Length: 69
Image (cartoon, rainbow, N blue to C red; front, side):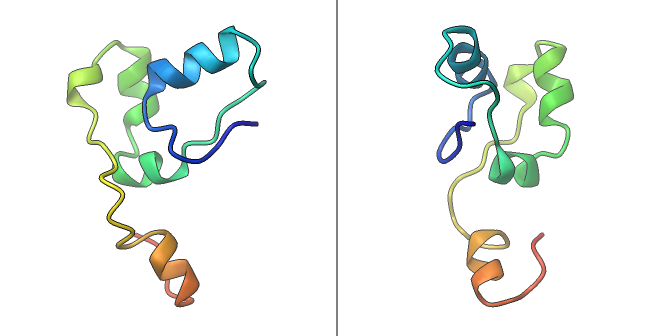
């Protein structure tokens, strides 16, 4: 499994296709845009809301034992 800073569905697809990994985890991207997988499957890449790595509402909140958003 590949994780960490993989925020582009095309990059994720390439990693799997070239055999680098069997699957990719994109947690923060899924928080930034829960519809990202569907948009990518439909080729609507320009509509994907990117994760800007602000660590507000995700990893930073988990450390504080607060719910993610």
